[in-house]
Length: 191
Image 1 (tube, one colour):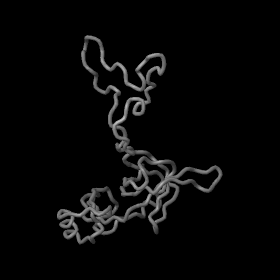
Image 2: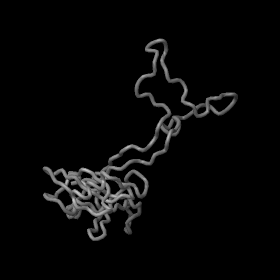
Image 3: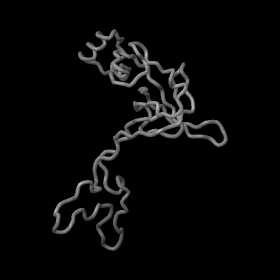
Image 4: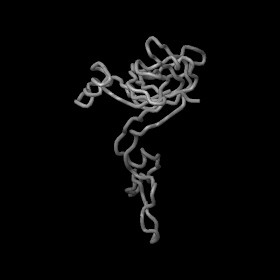
C-alpha cells in the first residue's frame, strides 16, 4: 500500500535514551478509479489548476482542492476516500523523497575530493585535476566523478514506524528521511 505524505520535520521521543524521529503528514487522498489494486488517486497540492485538471475533477466528482493526480497501490476496492487504517498495524515503511537540490557543484563538495596544495605557488586549489588517460583510449571514461548537478534525486530509505494518529494523519517514523520540510513524497508498507 502506498500513501502520499508531506514531511513536517524532525523531533525526538521523550524517553531514555531519546530516539530521533521524523514527522510525516498523510495527505487526504481520494481514490478515483481502481484497477487490480492500482488506483488513480487525487490529492491537494498548491494552487495548480488548468482545463485538464478541471476535466478530471468533473469526471470523478472532485472538489476544487483535489488538483493533483497520481497512481498508487491501494487497499481500496472501489472509489472513495483512501483507506489509511492499514498504517496502524504497519511496522516498517519505505519512504521515497527527493533530496535537497544544491545546483551545480564542484568535485570537492559533490564527491568529497581533497583538492590540491594551498601553498607555494600551486594554483590547484579546489579543482578536479587530471581527468583523462594517455594516448589510449584518448577520452574521458563514462562515470568519471566530475563537477555537476548535485542533489534533487529520489532517495528511498526504510524506517520503523513509531506511531500513527489516524485522526490527525500524523505518521511518526524512526530516523530521518530525505528532503526539506514541506516536501511531498511517498511511503509504502515494506515487507
